[in-house]
Length: 465
Image (tube, rainbow, N blue to C red):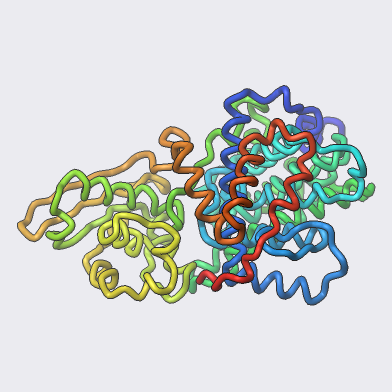
């Protein structure tokens, strides 16, 4: 057992300290924390998290963990579930980790701050940052050991749910101060809590929103059980019958990736922050349309057709044209292209029900044509070609969408996004206080001071749908 893969990963988590983290990683982590909190506060006003909260509130006992953006408090596990659903409810949470790491890790981590075992012992902002870094790292490592995003998700698994459970378990274990053996047990429990399918894509069902919440809840529950001495399988990552990779990725598994180069590079550094309220696979296409319109003044008034060459994998995810729900519109590339053409942006307001009924967008979508190219790698960014009414054509492929690590949102844009989203649930002074605390999290003596700052009045707002 001492040589098991799970124990080696658990030991890395248990022994990592804030001082082991490079300065640029700490700075990047605070940006992702800020971004996820903002997305969750806005998401707390959406239909799915409100329904979940209603269900949980109806059967709750007195709880200590806040439901962000509301005045409600629930038990830790229920709060992690509710906040995870809210974090992913508007497709504005970060991506590139397990995939949606922030929506899994932050709800579990902040719920764990309410654990009674902390007593009067502070949980510093540095402790929280370290736990978040480890959550992102473990979740991404599990996905890479499954063979990567395309093979694992291509088999029908939604990696936010399957791999995200381990991300939440790692973060919660760190904040609960579990040792290596306990953290290994948490990983074992998390494996049995893992699940989540892409079946939602065929009818734009709301199940996708639940996946982040279930992963956050499952990972936190795994850590809480391990902390109470419940043993978990030590060989859950090994090549054995019932091992996670054998069961979830039998054809694509690369288990050596789980432990490769631990601590360098840190996986959070590869994650992206979203500027647009849509599936990330639409973002480079939005960028391309906006860039072409900007480079050719007057083109927007002379479009005859827009052709998009994309991979079959992205076509399956984003080729739909159903605008009946928020979730279906956010997955639709034809709609994203039309937004970028007609309005020049794809923010949250453009995806809400009033905007989706705009006749100009229906007309624009009729001129958008998608072409799946079997020769394209699964995650290669699409190429956009615009043909004018005069017959001229211009084309562009944006290799790095805005928000990617090598093409990041600047600080001002990130803070504007946070203010807009957090403002759905908090007053202006509350938004400013919370942003200041999150951006200087490494200076916070006790991260539990964040919890009252998350309370708001999202329930007073019209449901976002």
